[in-house]
Length: 114
Length: 112
Image 1 (cartoon, rainbow over the protein chains, first blue to last red):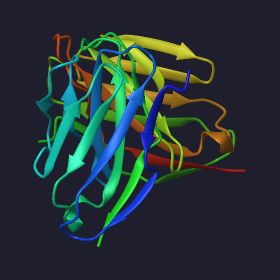
Image 2 (cartoon, rainbow over the protein chains, first blue to last red):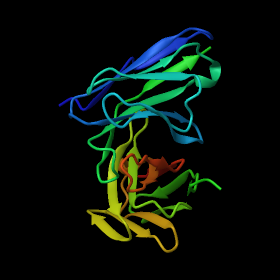
Image 3 (cartoon, one colour):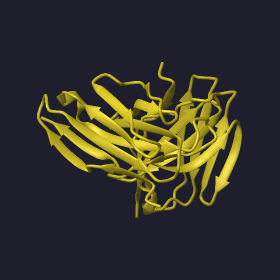
Image 4 (tube, chains in turn red, blue):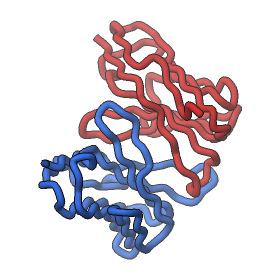
């Protein structure tokens, strides 16, 4: 099993450009998450999908949209990138939404917005 | 007050030292307590997982949860250079759509 995979690994954008970060998991998990990690800020939840067909906002959703394409895939879109969105983005998945299960993380996407 | 507070560090110790990492929290609904380890330029990986109060030991690692004090700890015995990483505490409630709340993480360096 590959676990959680993310593409691309690195990306540089200019202010105002758009892009989509892709995430896929092969563990048959129901719940998927997008986080951003900034120095001194820890991991902050952007959006999550408790199950296929549902999405909800997390702590820092402004400037982002998500799509749960199917059970395996959960994408994050930046419609008009801003320098404040320079960060490392992590996708994660979990078997169920309840706390009893482990959340597995992907390797991250390093995004720089100039 | 942040829901989860973690000493920012960084922390540097000599090889073989006992390391103590701590987090405090304010939300009494938290039931599941975790420690994630994150190596440089990698994603976090689950290191220890504890439900409710008590201790859990796994090799050189011991996780403690004191719900009455809203305080959790991770102890690393006989620390090794390979333990050098960022350690994040995380916790969540028992609800159907519970979400992890993370501490900011502390970077540990173990000197050979």
